[in-house]
Image (cartoon, rainbow, N blue to C red; front, side, top):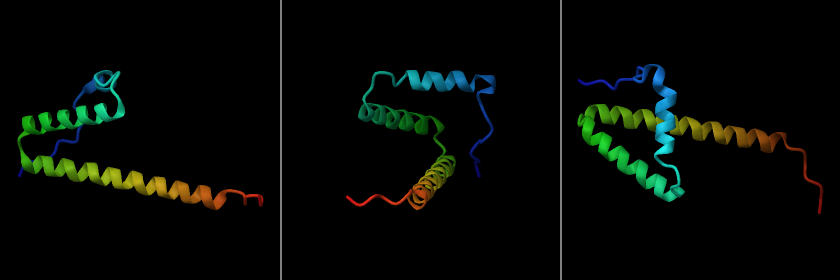
Length: 89
């Protein structure tokens, strides 16, 4: 069974790679950037070509997204709970 590689693969170049990734989307609208990222994802999935590894990556990405959504909901709940009462209008 193939395993998703989770160790950093850019060495000391991670920040430079991230800057390149952002620069490649410069000037695109949010919709065009989302389309670009979708195309890039399909290109890289094709390059990887191992569906087991890709399933692991999909699951990891979903877990991270779900955790972020829970953190956002918790933060909003705390803000609502900690907010002072509104003055009557």
